[in-house]
Length: 142
Length: 142
DNA sequence: CCTTTTACTTATCTTTTGATAACAAAAAGG
DNA sequence: CCTTTTTGTTATCAAAAGATAAGTAAAAGG
Image: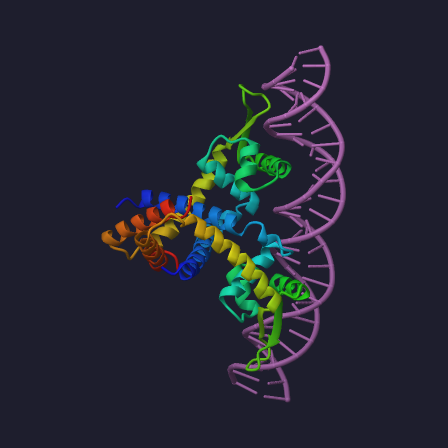
């Protein structure tokens, strides 16, 4: 198999993924959080609680800057902080009720957009879709 | 089929795509261009020549800011400008030789990373991969 | 204990990005 | 012609992001 051609398709594909996911979260995203802060909140949606170090790694931000953005998110009351009892150096961050609610709205809108995109598909096609999603994730991403 | 569960998988998937594509272009990307400038160059790789308006649309930047970044790219001699003879208001931008070369290096590195990720796969698996890629692109993205 | 390492925070400074106003030049359309 | 619209540029200012130095507090490891 021609790896070059496959790579071309891969590039085009990732470009489309970027564009679509940007489109799906557009609008709601700017609900008083900066892009960097949004990325942190998004990360918290899938992994909670998290330490600053973990966030810094996953979101590709230096630890000092992560700390700053977390402070701003706390000031906006979108997340909460607690000290880990087992290791009192570690700080555990989680979404606040407000934060959960806001991200809930973002995801709800995104899901709505997603539904529209898959609206015309049959049961069979949805199954294929799910299979393709899992295949790609298993073999290429992660 | 449960659309909610499918959407969850979709979210996890796009997060992984973002992370992987970021990882693949890391390092080379910072070769003296900012993220915004890189996005412009990447766009030029697939569409050349382009006008400032087109770029502004596709890269989601205001026209004045697009103009500024294009000027900086010209100063770095990564792209070139020419006036459209048919409509002398329009400015046509394209990658310079240096720009082509630089983006060539970026894509080469990305391809190398991609090759590593698909290294263990059989011919059969590669075929499945390609099919999955095309299916997703056709039915969901774009 | 005492030193070193780890996890995080604060402070500060620079660069990048985003937004807006004002302008110039070419084309379009009466 | 003369006005209006389109296309792009320049200038400026505020906000956000990136980088780095210096510091605190807890844990780990002799």
